[in-house]
Length: 65
Image 1 (cartoon, rainbow, N blue to C red):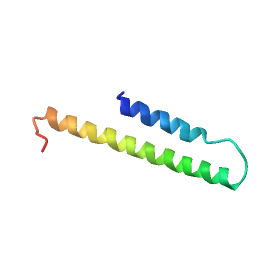
Image 2 (cartoon, helix red, strand yellow):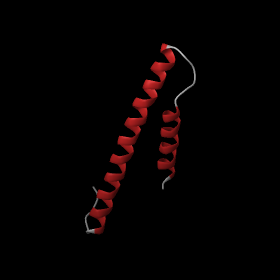
Image 3 (cartoon, one colour):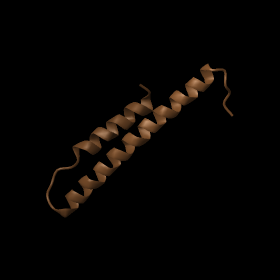
Image 4 (tube, helix red, strand yellow):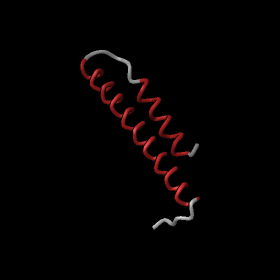
């Protein structure tokens, strides 16, 4: 696991926990955190897929631009 991956996972955990409190502002904050959590997960998965594609290309003798 890269340092960047660990940082993303840590941030995702913080987003998933949300914040304590009551009222519409807290609800809005928690909704925003949930949205961020989902987006971070998608970006992390896409990043990993791109890494695998790059590694496969290099193993097959390809070159990066």
